[in-house]
Length: 116
Image 1 (cartoon, rainbow, N blue to C red):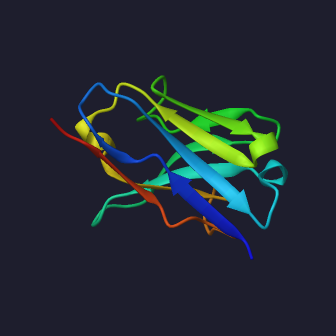
Image 2: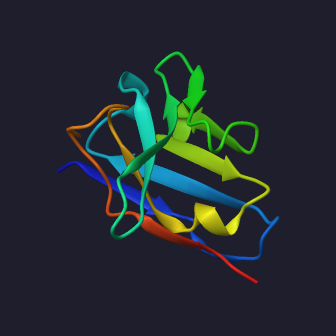
Image 3: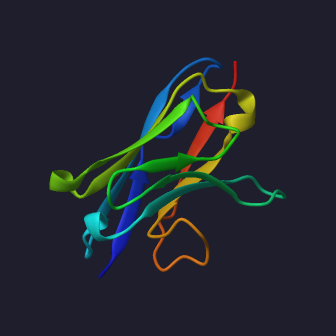
């Protein structure tokens, strides 16, 4: 059974940092480009980061220079380091086995709240 499980979300003050993890079972993440997305109720889903199979990365304009995606293939896990967080980064973040929807596989998501 394929599962993607995100963790690392929480409440952080503006300017703070969080690191999200996306751990997989039932598939090898190394074989996929992994996308990080975020969703706010009532708003369109936003692509945050794409971590390609070769380790190269792409970012949405709103997070460039603040977010960094990476892989640990030995742990079958992908990460999203988020620095200089802003209130507008508040959303549910999830990972998926593609960088452009529709998703073949995706996780349930983890809530990130940026507030003072």
